[in-house]
Length: 302
Image (cartoon, rainbow, N blue to C red; front, side, top):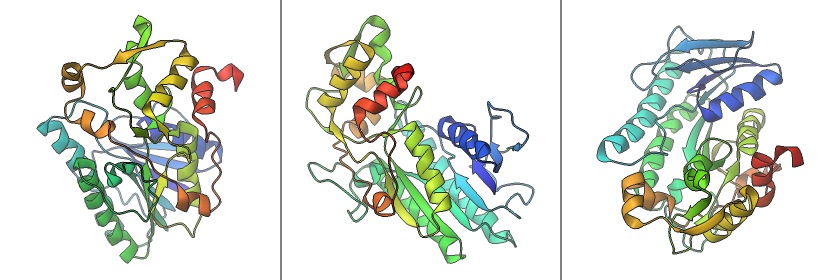
């Protein structure tokens, strides 16, 4: 297949591109920075699709388009950064829809990133895809983001939104939570315990492949391990894996300085079930936290 990946030079996009290329597919990356990998079937078009439509009739004769474009949420949230987080996702999706509309030979599938932030604070409820939208910035963003993708469905394109949990790998979420490890210790995000959902980087790549190949899968689905854990348990397992002691929690003033309003979001209860994905037959390679972290930090033991 020929697959266009908008935002394909980022963390998940790079992993997904490598997997697709290894399976014999052709990949066209559209991003503002060039991919870090080189392959005869990998093509790159430099374009910021948050400000302009996709160029060069790129979706003609394309089998699928995947949208991973958007400013990283793993940063300090200020009014300015939150505006960029929101607009980069909304505008990039709008521009992909516009391009699909003007394309004669439309792709058969449009897969768009999304987030489990849709559910807000789940408290003790184990939320599957039937749960209602929660409260907060990410919940509102996801609702607006996913509503745009319905236009592709109306155009006859199978559309999927991947509500993604924090991804565990050498980049992303773990790089934030292990910043103090170089000093020999770890800090919990806060004293009060809360539920954490997560997914291993190999499993998130596999979910995109599954969404691509499973023609009966459409709409929204949760890309999250079937085994969420409390934050205290997460830190305990992480501590044992990287051999760093947990030494208290991040002071409030420091949390505010480092994360801004993002701190409120990442310390909400996020207890999410990938029911729809598993009902379709998806099998997680790393369903348990201990196995996921061990693979990341101790690959020789995998």
